[in-house]
Amino acid sequence: MQKMVILGATGSIGSSTLSVVACNPEQFSVFALVANTNVNKMLEICIEHRPKVAHMVDEKAAAELKKQLPSHLGIEVSTGEDELLSLVSHADVDSVMAAIVGAAGLPSTLAAIKAGKRVLLANKESLVMSGQLFIEAMQASGAEVLPVDSEHNAIFQCLAERTQLEIGRCDLAQAGVSHILLTGSGGPFLTSELSSLSSMTPAQACKHPNWSMGRKISVDSASMMNKGLEYIEARWLFNARPEQLKVVIHPQSLIHSMVQYRDGSVIAQMGNPDMRTPIAHCMSFPERISSGVEPLDFFKVGQLSFLEPDFDRFPCLALAIEACKQGQESTTVLNAANEVSVEAFLNGKIRFTDIAIINEQSFRHVVAEPLTNIDDIMALDIQARRYALEAVSKLN
Ligand code: NAD
Ligand code: MG
Image (tube, rainbow, N blue to C red; front, side, top):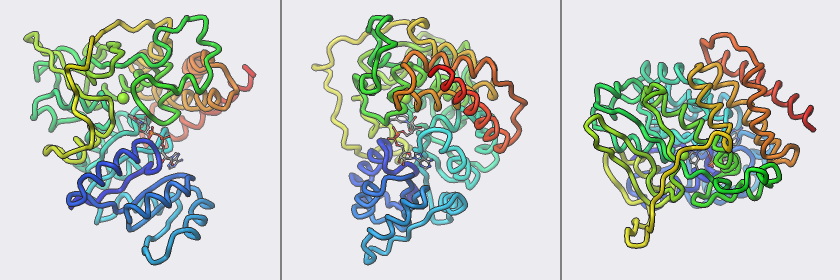
């Protein structure tokens, strides 16, 4: 029985994870569920999954949950940063699903890594921010990190076993890999008139053609900042050099990414676009379990198409690639600025096209010292957020 902590349990990835747990009750049990403010959802999943602990980051939400949770369930309610960090490091915990959205997920994800847990990594922002430190922490503790992000999970599945065992420090060239082909759908605005992008609403940006996801990542998909963050994520997970990474637009989202080998072979991982597949893969690796996902029906697939990314349409993707080449300080700044600009867009404060403007201004102006520990990263994150917030208010 694998005992799990699910960080971000009330979100989209959290729900998909709990649904895979429910498909395989004899193999997985929930030790703790962690969320921010959503008491109603937390109550519902606590009653269904009976964790030992339910942790709410928001203190008021924790108090409210405690009031509403039937006491006969014997579920402990907790709150507080230290409590969260000790929860993920608890001796009884085998694996941690890291699915908090944004920079907020970094401390708990890193704590799970330092405690040597099996970490199922959905929270790409934490890797984008901490890069080298994340990989070093992984190597120091021997924690096993498995990529949940569908593209990285696909790439992982297309690699040979010995390369899979060396995540974060593999030698792609030695493994015969010439390119990692990171696919992305291009999001809801792939074919929209360029002139219409500035008037796109949050509802339009969140209407992804193939995937159902949280609001932040949905906006990132519309701007292709998501692919940019994934480019940086791939750089660290697969120890890839920029010339080994290519972004390919594939609007149908049936191929989730590919690995191209020196001998001309290309290995692709395919499936219906449903996060329960990569989640189940990570939960049971190296075994396979059922995920509840419909098998891909090749007679209904139709045509698969591929395009080169257009950086005029997707300036955030170009920025992220540039930041990746510059290093961890630049990617931390870009990530923080993007969280601020996306939030401002979702709150109706700026236009869709302003996201790239704020991101670029912050990226060009915030100067960073080399990062040597998590406190440096968090301080730079705050500094970049402050800059981006000011840029938002100037645009207003
Ligand atoms: P979501 O918005 O649906 O859920 C976010 C979760 O994080 C919620 O449970 C929320 O309570 C929690 N949370 C938010 N702020 C928090 C804080 N300050 N402290 C603790 N918890 C907090 O998001 P999602 O779509 O499930 O995405 C989660 C992560 O997974 C993101 O990093 C995203 O990039 C990544 N991811 C998501 C998908 C997807 O299909 N949804 C795919 C790949 C990667
Ligand atoms: Mg992805």
